[in-house]
Image (cartoon, rainbow over all chains, first blue to last red; front, side, top):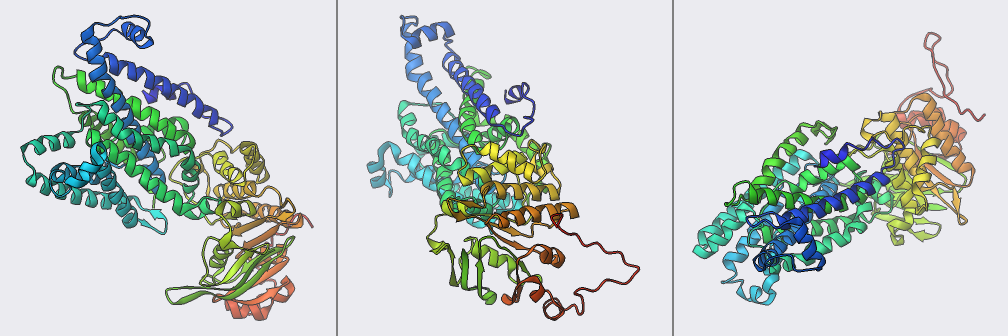
Length: 362
Length: 260
């Protein structure tokens, strides 16, 4: 889809991609709108798009009661959740790549998702035990908050381990990410041994990654996290651009580098952790969307970050439509769909066909 | 005026900078020379506010650098670093634009274009930075620094250009061009501090030479006082090198400013 968008554009002759960025953002917004309509319309009970439009504009009762119930109780929360999760995953990926100055940094690959998953599983298993008082106080926010802190811990660890003198080597980043992820997975295994049957069912949902079981409760539990991350985009975009030139150059250009990095680490953990809390681990969205967008609109975070929010939402909704329909009436885990699409892109990136190669990175 | 007083930087038990004082005056082109490991880059990092010295302090027009926000410093001085590599394919224009944005330009894109043509890179705007040659990348970075301090004096306050080996990886013509732009910047009332390895270029362009060795200032002043046999011999270990023409069968080229 993104490839098709690239066609109408020639490289800007004057080197200024501002206008192109704005056009691509508008196209992405349109794509997101279409994806929302598809997500609302497609399913075992098809809803006619025209009827949907009449219903949405409130200009008449076009839908049967059954259709309305399906739409309001099932499809609407699922679409809203998919949009937020997709946006959160793609933005956290783009921010992390900017922070590490490395297009291969993805929360799923470098163990941030595992950290959030571990914390969420711990929340499920220990929520009735030693963490019960905390769970009582936090209610709906307990799971996302736990996942947030799990993700935050792993991001911080990764940054401390893989970054020397402000530079992150690809090899160290990926390898330490694998180690941190493996450690989290091992601890998750311990939790699973401790879990009872009902908790095991909850945990299984996680490892697969799914938008099934979406409720407005889940939508509202992650809305503050994803909303906050999207709100800070304009405040970190210029800093992340400057950071591409290195810590020192960014400081010379007036960026408070340490503060920027802390904000971005917390934002990555918030976006990634909260999405893991409601939808399990859905891989590769955080690497595929920013990568394709860089090819189309250039690497400037002014457009890359909002573009990732829109494109991530659209991509995940479309992937969810595929997951729901391909094997109907059964449903594929959405993580399977994104991995089928995303893993080849990751390999492509690693082999470096587009000027971004391992050679270019220390 | 930008001043460093009694600055000492110790790392791993070694004094990289040992009790150095330096005044950078408006209108003056100051060049720091010295052998590898003399502490030249460290001194520049301290003066640019990037590195905190262990003792001593740096002030910008009387205000301690510790009390300046990064944003305010960015409007007073720009820094040209040594070679910079990028993991993302920004265009030349987008890189230079970052400097203009840091300065708070109302039309950063236009300022970036002007800075690029000042360094002779008009027509390179849309080239991805990673695809440029080492010398072209260096000039793009120089344009970025120029876009960050486009006027040598603004609101009555002199701006500063700090250049860490600006001529590395440049051909002879561009070495001279870059230093001439810096020379003009100083002549118009700005502050220039450059680290150079080429003593001929240093002697050609500097108003004020600072010779650094083992973290200490061993000589300071006009070129005639500092580039002499005695100091060159003690710092670089080369005897009788100043003002001698090599043996007749060795051609030699001495690049000189086109201004005189």
